[in-house]
Length: 381
Image (cartoon, rainbow, N blue to C red; front, side):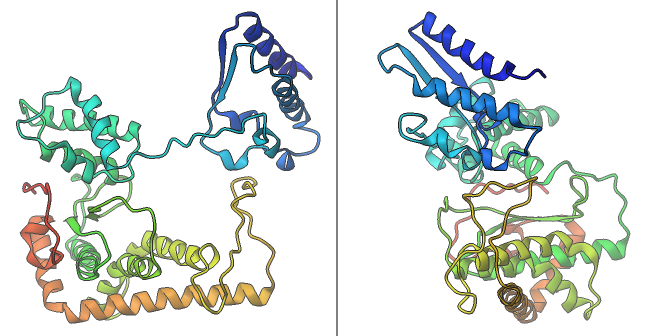
């Protein structure tokens, strides 16, 4: 609010720390204070730059034997000012990443300590279904599973309760009160079964665990849930191409069954497919024509939430668009070929889905991926 207040508070902070040594200074959300100065607007944010400069000056005058330890945390290290990360300042960085499967089991053991688990419940099976969950997500999962058990008047939390909690976290609340006409329900069933059958056919895609046409969340009229079999850190080009095919499987099924009369239901799918194709071309250099180079700079922070794209010629932009279109068209053709070959499974799956509303992989054999053991799938629809 007043010029110089931020810098004065930084000076006061370090003076207090030195006066009460041994002590620890911990700065949470360091990016709020140490954002890169190259993106600060002239005039309005001069005070913020003054505060950062004072912090840098205090760190430079730091005496390692003074008994003061300086720690900071941020979720956005890429936007920090480079001066903060130079040797002698915040030069030791510790990555606290999302936990792997073993880590998720350990975290779950902490959070299930306050709830009663069913005899024989394997937390490793729960960890296998929660790839990508952070510690806070797992804490929320344990709480939601306990609530699910309470709703059914259960005495203990079962694996089915954890599955219901995962479904609620990932897909949102069920909206059974939402009235959908019979033609729309059939189209939704066709769309979701298209996703599921393409996923069940392609070898590198996560196996299908559940397909539902019950509306969830704010706008989802149905969903297909896949279960990762292992934590992944790298993806090959063939795997990304298969992911695009699965994403486009719903639209492909509609086009096949309704003879090209497609609907607006694939809007999110198209956005997801476009994002994967864009990353393949401009980030991972996976197109021979465009070349093995990147067209985005992760080192440069986004300005006003928009990622910067490095300057490229108009002809190169055209090549990028053509490459993306080719990837999506190839994946779409692949999905259509799979569904045309498995048309009988598609029609039978749609009828079964309309009847039961929810299908698990063990309920419908065509959804099972060869060589994959179904672990911990719920049986109640």
